[in-house]
Image (cartoon, rainbow, N blue to C red; front, side, top):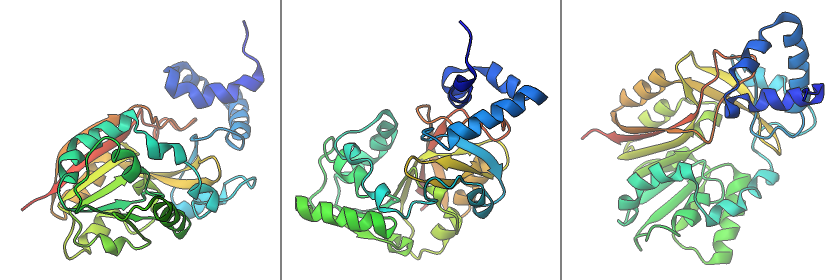
Amino acid sequence: MGIHCRDWGSLINDGAKSGMDWISRLETWPLLGSVLERLYERRFAGGAYGSFRGVFSSFDEAGRTAPHNKPLGFATEDYAKEFADRRSRIFSFDYPVLFWLAPLLRNPIKLFDYGGHCGTHFYAYSRYVKFSPGLQWVVCDLPEMTRHGAQIAKEQGEAQIGFTNRFEDSDGADVLLAAGSLQYVESPPFSTALARLKSPPQHVLINKLSLHEGRSVVTLQNGGVAYHPMYIFNRREFIDSICAVGYELIDSWAVPSHSGRIPFHPEASFPAHSGLYLRFRA
């Protein structure tokens, strides 16, 4: 059975999931590659949720190339209303985080959830771990997210969760959790933000982070309700930058459910997102 032209966009986008290296090879063919790239552009501007397109030097450069059929960036109420189902369940990529986090949550600590949406992990993890009555969970995100999160907490009578729009409020926290957020923060670099704190968190747990072995670049992602630029960090540089401000790497893991294939750019692609646990050196 032959493959129709309209199917190529889907094949290109899904190549990493099915391990089709031959798609990457076809992308390098001069004439066919041009056709495939046009087909992928059409798919990217459509319903290719989670897909990536292009390699750029900055967020601004990536943003200028975004299709005009939906907004650019996370500052939209539509994002605040997404992921409601994730407040009631966990996923395979949550288990490494819970392995390290569960013992800490049983103590009266302050946890700073950087890019924590509306408190997704607070609600989901509470179904599997008994939180200490003295736990203080602070979610830091954009105003659109924190307003919605505060309303949910009020409706559910949750007193242990609070919200902020300032990273500086992580000062004095025991744990900093950043699950799928750091690559979307344009500046300052995460290590610089940590270095500015008077009392940096003892524990840093990072999940669903885009790391690879090549140079750090920016790509554009179709996020469903909007497009957004995103960093792909050089693994060694990213980890070393955090270690340079006083941390040591304790654990790392792959998140195979989140691949990072960028069609037509194998040099920037990566097989899976990553997770890291770093602890401040005494």
